Every structure is written in C-alpha cells, then in structure tokens.
Length: 284
Ligand code: ACO
Image (cartoon, rainbow, N blue to C red; front, side, top):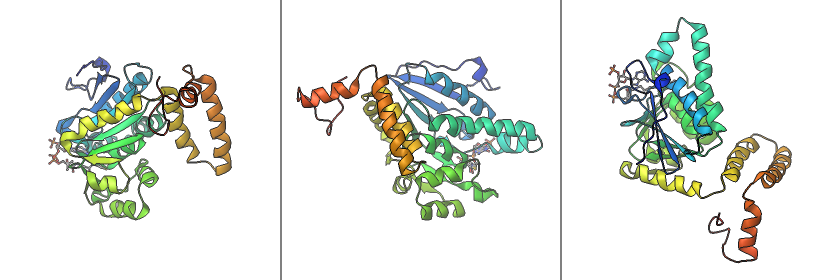
C-alpha cells in the first residue's frame, strides 16, 4: 500500500505520535484515529487534527474517497472522559471552544463533505463516536465490532448531537432501546437497525471497504458530490421546496460538469447502444 502521511509536527501529540494517521492508496484516503492504547477515545488532539486533516483532504487530489476508521482494535471508544470532559469541567471557555471544534469536524464538516465518505468500524464504537459514524455517507462494520450508547451507564444522556444523529438513521424502537439500556450490540445488529450499510467478517472488512470505494470512484465526482449533498438537504425540506431545489441542482450540475456526463451517457445509451444506465456507469 502506498503510504504518504500528511501529518506534520502541528498534529503530533505530546507523546510524539500523530493523533490521526492518514495514508493514501489508489484514490482512497485512509484516516485512522490513532490512540489505540486508549481505544481511540477522542481527545482534544484528535479534534484539532481531524479539523485540519478534513480541511486539507477536501482539496487533495490523492483523496477521492475518504475512509474513517481507527488504529488497532477500536473504531473509537467515544469522547475521552478524562481529557474532553473532566479536564474542562471547571473551564467553561475552553470547553465551549472544544465542543464547538468537535461538532465542526464530527458533523458540520463531515455531513456535507465534498468527497464521498465511508466509516469503517473495525472494533469498539461508543457514544460520541456515533456522530462521525452517522455523518459519513456510508458505513461498513466488522461483524465482530462492539457498539454501545454507553452514556446512560455513566450518568449522562447521549448529547453533543448523538441523539439527533441516531434518530436520523435508526428506527425509534431500536434507538430508544439502546439509548435507555446502554446495551452493547455487534456489527450484524448495527446493520439490521440501519446504523451501518452492512457487516462483514473483520478479516474482510478492509477489502470490502476498498471494493465500495472503487465503485464510488467510477462515478462522475461532481455528480456524486451533488447527489450526496442534495440528498441531505432535500431530506430536511418540504416536498415543494425539494422539488424546486432538486431541479435547480440538476441544471447547475449540467452547467458545471466539465466532462458533460449527462450527454455523454445519453449518447452511449441512445445512439451507440454501448451501455445501459440501469446496469453500470457510463464510460468516462
Ligand atoms: N475516555 C478516556 N479513556 C478511555 C476511554 C474513554 N472514552 N476509553 C478507553 N479509555 C482508556 C482507559 O481508561 C484505559 O486507559 P489506561 O490504560 O490509562 O488505564 C485505556 O483506554 C484502555 O482501556 P481499557 O478499559 O483498559 O480497555 P478494554 O479493552 O478492557 O475495554 C472499552 C475497552 C470497553 C472500550 C472500555 O475502555 C470502555 O468502556 N471505554 C469507555 C467507553 C465509553 O463509554 N465511552 C464514552 C461514550 S459517551 C461519549 O462519548 C459522550
């Protein structure tokens, strides 16, 4: 695998280890939270590194699809109880800034990211880690991964925007069950309740994620960006607003698309009869 780390000294934790690792492989940027000894609990170093990395990758041509995952055997054990919560208990200004910055990467940036994003859940996934998981466009979990909305177990509610994020994907009965019991569930169950697209054995997780990334990379990137952002926007509009907005978006896409995909594809289907849109992507 071609590895090219974009971390620099500003993203290195006091221990000298980058809090987030980035490596590139044929268009995929693998972004791994990197505190495996702390089960990738999200501390201020991770928050600031993720903000910077997401910013940089947005205009880095080596990143066509972004995969968010964790080093070692964890996706992330949620927010760091020591460094994110306890350390700021008596420092409201630092806390307010930190909470804002965390929301910035976990959902403000990720939900409307201009590149396709896949969460690859390789192990422990708790509480605050649900927000970036839900914010990614797609998610694949290891069957063996362990999930939990563990907030109730230690005396808080799923906050930040965890409750809102879960409500966006999971049926209410299932969401309420896990919010109220804090019970663990595995990757298969996460797929059943709609939290991830699918679960595969851990041994296949990376390959399956690669396969999915390759499917996305075959699509016209401008249209892919428009499709994901338009979906998220339209989901929160009235039907009338959505109809108006979506048709305007199609026009914008046609106007802006340097590769003229719509007309190329139409010609390949209607004139050349060399491709079927129902079965594959057009030749780019
Ligand atoms: N915050 C701070 N430290 C953490 C966290 C966390 N969320 N998760 C793990 N760690 C630390 C542990 O304190 C331990 O540190 P130490 O080596 O200095 O003692 C180290 O990571 C390893 O953790 P263990 O508990 O020893 O690992 P184990 O594999 O036995 O258990 C598990 C893993 C189940 C994930 C456990 O660490 C755990 O329950 N973590 C907390 C999960 C959680 O509830 N997160 C908060 C969700 S709520 C929210 O995010 C708002």
